Length: 215
Image (cartoon, rainbow, N blue to C red; front, side, top):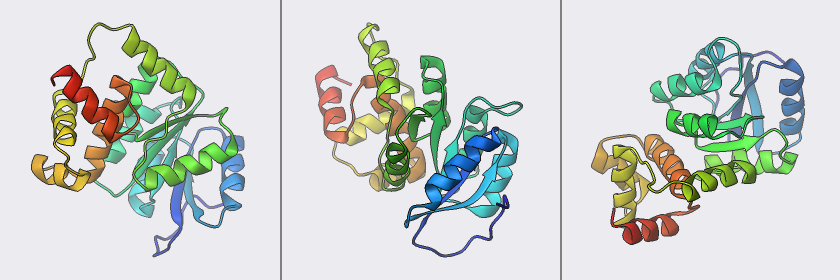
């Protein structure tokens, strides 16, 4: 397929695939083509190209590989987030080590899946991030929980701490965004990262964690 498609109004979840392996891009395109609610509108074979493609096509979700020559997936995610577009980055990679997971979440990714995931998990992951969820592959989640269990103190950024405190107050993402003068996408990215660091999966657990730890 062409790596470009004109942006248009649609009820479909519009996806751009970023991976340096053509076979993987083709496989993902074939998988997504069989769904009624997901549409592949473009692809990129590297991080630098992905920023330009996302800027022009304005997809809803970017499926982002991490290990790529030149600009890698973490740097590309950070650059895409800096564009301030209404787009969610869902990592799809072969790596589940702590450094890459935390780097991707810190860069603004709102989900982290591994390439050995079931095809249905990839489809559900795309739908989840678009509806406000933060899917994380079980193996990656165990890695993050292991970090938590082996650490005497969870290391949160100042902004993650602010966002968690506001979650504890019962504020929704839109309200948090207004309070902190940031976008809802940025709030979501901070929540994904913070949830991973403290080992919780939803707002209720996060609020309890904040209260329990006197944050």
